[in-house]
Length: 441
Image (cartoon, rainbow, N blue to C red):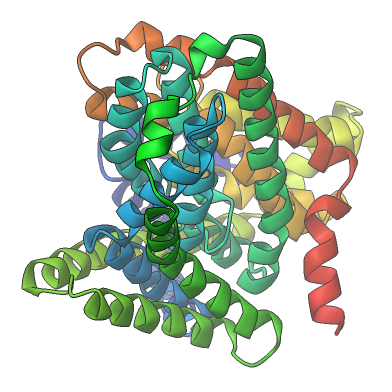
């Protein structure tokens, strides 16, 4: 049996196991270990062992539980609620102002958690009821929350970029910095769309009434500003220390986790329930990602040993006579198609052994490609029929928001994301300038 046929058999076996509903890490790890033992006998057991040791020795992995802890501490202690109340009061007088404030909230939550689920939970539980009560169009605000929450996997500290960095063997610090400007660009395009649409159709996002604005005194505004600025100060102080070179990436994550805990304690919101929930959720997320990374490394090692990547590169470039850009576009389209059925981690683990080495062989920057992959995941999250964010929103939304409303609501935001993806592909420096500038200092 040829190596190409073995690689195809591994890939199809893995897909078959995933279709049975088995855990992602279990299906991928099982196929990798069985293939290694069948190919190399007892020596194949070293593949999984070396992958585990590589994972344990990867120092930046410490940032994963620390940043997740920081995000859940801010969420469980209610500090994120203060942030939304601040945006609500200060942005409410504008048409569409609360929706714009919701995007700003999602950017802040993304910068404190790194997971889209956290942004979706906060947006659906805090922002959505308030927006509907204020008379905002239910379809527009449903799309706003889904699009805003998707920024969590792009804006640092993105957990998805940590996973990509481990599999692609790229520095997480550079990947996080590469995600800053594309994430802010996308958020800015969302805000621009909301502002223009609500200016043309004011009934979609009515401003706060004159009576409500009079009821809110400047003293209340300042107090809310002070309350909401605490989580932002935590993030910017943590990021500032890293950019100034005072702390390393791991040290910055420890600063953020400690600062969030101290802020909750200072606000008298740190109790046993908050701490238990934060630790439980942090442990669950961290363990899940570690198992996935371990399975992906094992699968990738077997694929490298088979030389499957070289065979695929030869197939696309020599036999099909495709240019590197055509191959890259095909990869992005395949991610969007897979995203209709799988989440981001499953997509990356399934195709990373094939795509990441191929991208490097084609001459593209792997840090830049990490940003492209993440933006494509955001699009896939919101693509019917089985987009990840679509079903999260359906589970969290009130009964008056139907599945049809959810599907319709994402259309303009998916188009905006595609525009952002094209801009980053055409102008790679949008992603690469900041990491190049920082690490050149």
